[in-house]
Length: 279
Image (cartoon, rainbow, N blue to C red):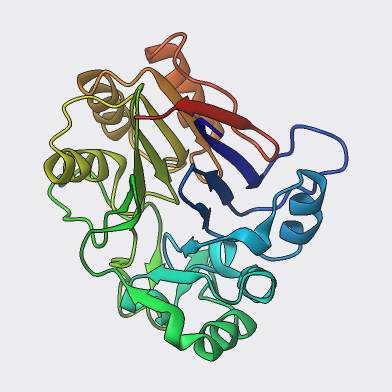
């Protein structure tokens, strides 16, 4: 293989018959050096979609968790059963209790107990990512992302307790980036730290002033017009050629970005595949 290949395994929507759609995200990344599973969805869709897309999970060298929410970690038991020797890159706070207030109802959204148990049974493989580090050659994880732009928040009413007294800043939110011949490719889980904060931090870490592609969840469903505009400005400033928003981005936000950045926004659903030349 001479290129880097990225396949969306789990997403809210599916591009073809035979794939399950679920509220969640999982992305398979193949490089000449290694294979990486970025997030695992809620759980039910991962086995069927991986089989349908011929994703060799047993060849995963690394599993990277963008954060500890159920819709990104639920498939961990299956993933770790298939690839028990894979290193798991996760922020130490990913195990924290998590709640979300929706329509006056507080519900738990933390890592499911089976996923937590699977991780703890593979504790020797866990690599804590409070800081940025290289996952495999050519692929890095950000670790905790500084929150420097006041107009960016976590994207919703998130709490660390059932009473909603302790706001959850979701400090474990992290993204990954890949070095390709076309330019840097960024893969976001939910971007609870903010898309702009994330891109600016990766720029600081990598020295890049431009990105070729940015894909993944952007958590802009509740974003103000100001925040949407600032996000579009940042994507323009970094001269992003391809944008593939999905999962938690929100349809209105995707439409806004498509109008603001014509020709740059592409569909991103389970079954979507992207390929990039080697650096």
